[in-house]
Structures are given as C-alpha cells and as structure tokens.
Amino acid sequence: MRFGRIIGSILFGAILGLAGQAGAQTVRPVQVQATGVAELADTLKIAEVIEIMRLEGVDYGAQMEEEFFAGRGGAAWKSVVDLIYDGPTMQVRFQEAFAKQLAGHDADIPAIQSFFGADLGQRILALEIEARRSLMDEAVEDAAKAFVEDMMAEGAPRFDALQAFSDTNDLIEMNVSGALNANLAFFQGLAEVDGGAPEMTQDDMVMMVWGQEPEIRAETEGWIYPYLSLAYGPLSDAELEAYIAFSKTGPGQVLNSALFGAFDVVFSTISRDLGRAVAKQMMGQDI
Image (cartoon, rainbow, N blue to C red):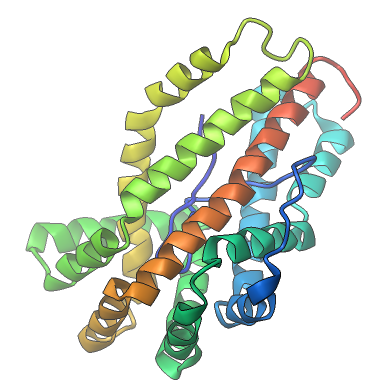
C-alpha cells in the first residue's frame, strides 16, 4: 500500500509524505523553548510545507476512495479526509512534536536560525517548497526522473553532490523508516475498529509491513533524486556545497533528526486515523 511521500531534505524531514492525526494522545508542549521553536518553524516555512502535505493528503484520500470503496465514499468520506488532513491541526501537532524533539538542543537553534534565516537559506527553502508543489504534477515528476537518469548516465558531478546531500542527511533510510511506521499505524487503525481486521495480530501487521519494505525502498530511491535535482537545480555548485556543509554540522544534524521525528509523529497518527476511517466505511459505520 502506498502512503505517499515522506521524502525530505533537511527541510522535508519526513516526507515522501501523506499523514494526519485524529484521536491521538495529546503531546505536552515543551515550555522551555516554545518561543524559539515557534520562531524556527516560521523561519523554516513549516506552514507552507504542511499546506502542500495537506493537499497531497486530500488527493490521496480520493485515491483511497477508489481503491477501497470503488468511489462509493461520497460526502462522508471526503469530510473525514478533510478532517484528518486539517491544516491548523497538523501544524499544532507538528509544533508540539518538534519542540519535544528539540528539547535539550537550545544551543543549536541560533545556528539553525542563522543559516535558514539568511538569503541563501530562505532561497533554499523556497526552492524545496516549489519543487514539492511541482512534483504533484505527474508530468513534472516524469521529466525530473528522466533528467536524473541522464545525469547518472553521464556521470554528472551534480548527481554526485545530490547523492552526498542525501547520504549526509540519511534521507533514504529515514524516509523508508517513516513510511514503514505510517503503514504499521494504518493497520493498527484498521484493527481498532470492531470487524476491521479481526484476525490480524500485531505480529501479523509487523510482518506485512516488513514485506512492503523492498517496494517502499525502491519508490523512495526512485523519487528522492528527481526531487533533489528539481529543488537544487537553480543553486550553484558553491551554494549546494554550503548546504551540504551545514547539514554535516551538529546543528544541521539536530535539525534533520528533529524534523524527521516530528513529521513521523504527525504522519503516523494520520495514517492510524485513515485506518480507522477505512474500517468504519467498509463496515458501514458512521465515520
């Protein structure tokens, strides 16, 4: 089952991404650095990132309707998908999880703010967001994939730089892990509804999810470099190298880990809620 992209970069730490949350446990805000984290989230344009993820999620909800209900979900299904992918709710949950992830790393926040608050950092963020938005168009995605294939065939130095960026931020492993977590949460959501998955144990779910790992890995590897090439194509070699250099620093690694961790919380809860909603729809219950 394909849950979308939680594919990252240092910004999109989690994102080949479809996700959401409903009925989840409340995350207690980390008061000590709440203000600094909120300012950092603004600098990183998280609201814009989440809006794109919301649009991806709504689109994915429509695909799920065709897959599970043959288009019979109707207004009730659309309403529940809109609720699960509610933008303000996603932002609050991200903010709380992000603060928790950054707890104890107050000393790293100024360096992160300095890099991404500067002209180059803001330009990088804008490029990442626009690339993510553009790749919602299948024709753009196909063209980006073809471009990457050409770079690889030619042994282009730019592809080596993109690979170095991906490796520095552990993008493939972190995205695969996030997708597996989201898929497990989906099955857990199914099982929480009476009759949704009556014979499926936790061990069964884990085995089923691990069975999807090769497909998820292949999809991740097949999407991440087209995304990176589209996002960072306008950057000069020196600018991309500066981004890689920052990613290797302590603050860069702290941010990368915090973003993946926070989006993993958001995405896993959304997937769990989607599982519940699918089960209820299939059982003819009120969703």
